Length: 163
Image (cartoon, rainbow, N blue to C red; front, side, top):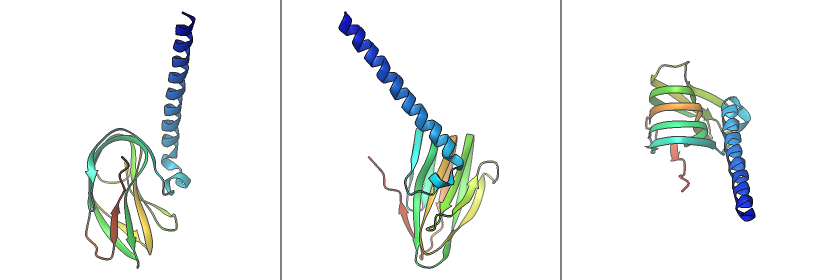
């Protein structure tokens, strides 16, 4: 009987610790929405409650429910260039933005909820090196459809999938 109580108590402690860590991570990701020092890093930190769809070389179609920042593409060029990205967004709740991080770690907000139309296009300015394109969410739920227009001077790399 004593062993059952110890096992039950230990199980409860483990559950509380795991729940606390998950909550702490989500809170950090929500806080990081406007934290440029975190966003400009090559690493990503995100929590998806739901992610359906895919990201390809020139297109991204995703339904999401997430917080944090996630890398979609890396755009590389040897000379200054730009790419045009057409978009169609439907953000149901939360805050969401698409950002470009230059090789010198400058952040350019390309699209953000409440400040842009739900469909249209934006230009992505590129300099010599690799520019990261990230999506950033704070309890964001919605759909995005992005299409990069071909530019032979720019090499597009899709974020590697971690299995």
